[in-house]
Image 1: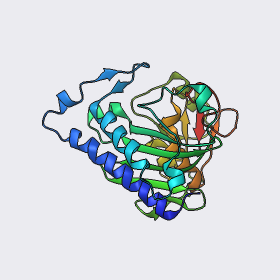
Image 2: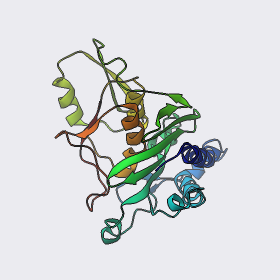
Image 3: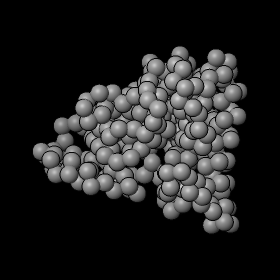
Image 4: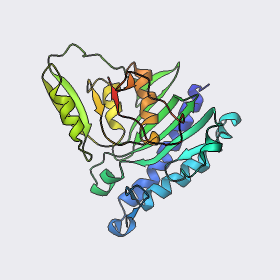
Length: 258
């Protein structure tokens, strides 16, 4: 369904959204521009989130493939779509215009633009762009996974004596510590913000990402596509594939990337 041409178009949209974010990131009145609003779940919302949202919303409708251009969009910044409508969707865009808003506010560079194409509950394609470092991860079923146009693959170092376990920089979880204590081999923690955690597993810079804390579907979908195309698994604690738009709630269950 996704061609190389379309994937390049998605990368361009993510870069354009990233430019909108970085304009605020580098603004002399940064502190005023990020005047934080609290969303319904108490997560932060800034002008950068909204600016990126508007870019992506408009640019997706201009895709060369008109079938894709006309698909429904579900974005973190426009998520109030009734379940009765949403459950009819077979294929749609799932977007997080600025994933890692806390990292953006801290100005540590670990935030991303996430755009995913979902079909029948699974991510078919995704782009994850980190504008502060100009790092682009992209992938599509049948096309493979890439970092800045270079192919990447997971599990290249799966026999290492020490597990590299990536974890959230801003969302510590007691369940995570309990999980780590049960690992039967030495491990090293790799802290990272936003959806970049899944991408580290996709490019074999980490072996394992246990997410034993709250996430929403837009937080994971694009990087999930990258991880799958790179050969990683993204499964629930019961070993089932992580899915999208299969229930009224947009919260993910706990999951493991390996």
